[in-house]
Every structure is written in C-alpha cells, then in structure tokens.
Length: 375
Image (cartoon, rainbow, N blue to C red; front, side, top):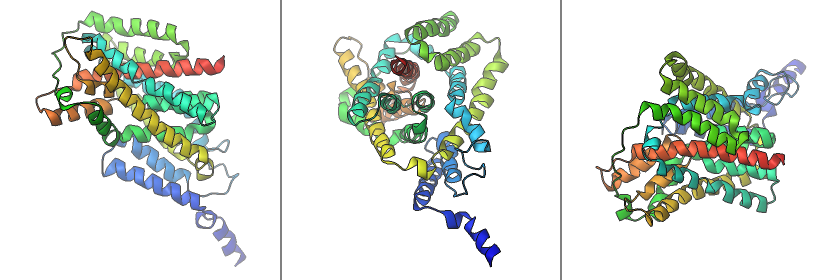
C-alpha cells in the first residue's frame, strides 16, 4: 500500500492545481481554433499543444519543466530567451516577401508607419497602470501585431513576461478576422470602402535588388538595436531577389522558418506553466494588448483618411488596417472587407504593401524601445 500511495503521489492527478486545469482548457481552445476554424494554425497549433505540455503537473527538481535547468524543454526555450528563433523567423520572412507592391506605390509605406501609433499609446497606458518601463515597452510592442518581434523585445527587456506577452500577441494575430473588420467598418463609410486603387507600375529588378540594401542602411542607422531582426530580414530578401542563391532562399523560406516556428510556438506555449502564467499582470497584459492592437488598426485607417485630404487620387482607407505587422492575415482581411462592399475591388496587393512596411516599422519600434531602456 505504501508503494501504491507513493506511486499515486507522483502522478499528475495527485499534483494537479486548478490553475493547471484552466490553462489546459485554454490550450484545448487554441488547438480547436487552429484545427476547426483554421485561425492561424501554423501558430495556434504549436502554441496550444505547448500549453498542454507545459501544464501537466510534475515533481519539481526532476529536470522536466521548461524553467528547470538542464531539462530538454529548457534547452529548446533558450532559442526564445536569447532571441534566436525570432531572428530566424525574420530571415524566412524576408525570403518570402515581395516588396514590388511597396516599391510601386511608396506612399503606402506611411500607413505602415501610422499603424505603429498603437505601440506608443499603449506604452503610456502601461506606464500609467504601474508597469515598469521595461515591462511597459514589452507590452506596448503587442500593438505591432508581430509575434516574433514581441518575443524578441520581451526576451531582452522582461523575460519573466515572455509567456503572457507571446500568447497575447499570437492570440490577437489569430483573431484578426474578429477584431479588425468591426473597427474598419466603424471608421469608414461605404463610399470610402469601395474606392478602387490604381494598377501598380512594373518594378524593375534593379529596384528590388537595391531595396534590401538601402532599407537595411536607412532603418538600422535610425535604430541600430533593430539589427538582430532587420539584418536577417533584409538578408533573406536579397537572397530571394538576387536569383543566384535559389537553394538558400528556398531553404530560408521553407525548412528554416518552419523549424523555427515549430520550436518557437511549442516552447512559448510550454512556458505558460500555471504558477508562472496566471497572475494579475497577465490579465493586465491581455487587456492592454487588445487596446494596443485596436489602436494600431484604427491609427492606420484614420491616417489614410487624413492623407486623402491632400491627395487627388484617393486611397482606400481600409488599407490602413493592413499597416500592422500581421502578415498576411491583416492584408487578407482588408481585401475581404473591401470585396464584401464591391466584389470587383481588388485590394490584396496594395494591402500587402502596407503589411510589409508594418513588419519593418514594428522592428524599428522594437529597436527604439530597446535603446530607450538601455539609456
């Protein structure tokens, strides 16, 4: 009987905490949304299953948990805490990104910059709620709607908040179809939503080759702390555009980014151990994250309306919502909202221009916030 009791006391059924059950339910919801609803499955499925793994109760000191030194999960988690996985993801994103639409209509880059306003408004809000500057900066970057960027900055400034910030960032990215359309419709009229954008001019190969070089120099001179993200990003893009290293570009845009995404999502999910994750700060992060994402969407739309006051050729204000960095989810949603008003209105390529500029903008903001905290 003593042996049986000792065995029982070592099981997860005996050690379970109600908070573990709460997180397991959350993990199941993520898995359901990924499989049944297909909401960003490449992100939600690894994260959701990681939440399940991270909340199975165990005896501390066995080298099992993600926060225990020398455990397998701890070693995998190093890629998150060191910022390695986000940099690799940016390499793959660069190799997948076509900047032709942005180069064909550079003024759309302004919408990507305007959407970053959500970051700075949320920074002030988080400071007002009593968060320290490093924590407020990490929370604010959720407004960029870029999971890897949020994880990278949080790993540098507030590692203890990686779990809730990463889950919040990826959750709002996955819920774009629910969050952005109501904001877009609220801030625009039907007349604005049916504005047709002009056809884009052809972009030369020389322009596409010059952009990653010029972009790297301009952006990283402005915010040198963004080098770990934008360096790989523009390197991946020039590999793609050069057409002389197709094997490398294809590997970066497939096997490498997929591998990094698997480990990034899984370990971030596993980091949500209930005793670490379920805190009042986590609740505040989720609330502020929703505010940040909403303000970012609204800022892009409103700035497009302001630009129209000065332009003869009007911009469809819906494009401003694609200024956030959620590639390609927000661009796709802008296109769908526009087509519901007018099926002949094709906004996808213009929205991708705003989307790709949002990726660059959020990385620059991360570099600026990181440098502020180092002063």
